[in-house]
Image (cartoon, rainbow, N blue to C red; front, side):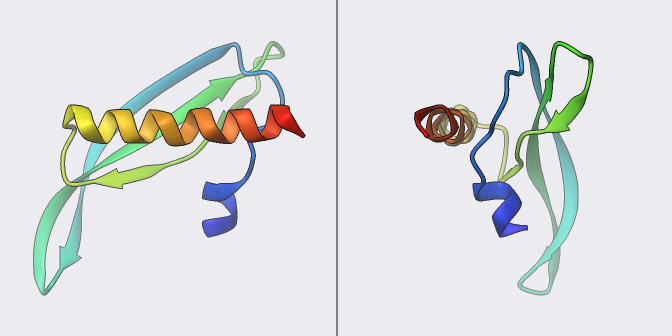
Length: 81
């Protein structure tokens, strides 16, 4: 999973969409809800690919900002090589 989440994002994905959902997880012996952000890219051939995933306590603006910055950094790394 770590390799998937830290890989450079290669190729062109002109049609991105990003959504979040909540899932229940066990933390410290309790069941809690956490936010999961999943960016999906669609290339010009219509192929879809999950571009990443991020987990956070809620959909607060700070979580969205950090998640989008990680995604932008992965795209930048791929285009720099």
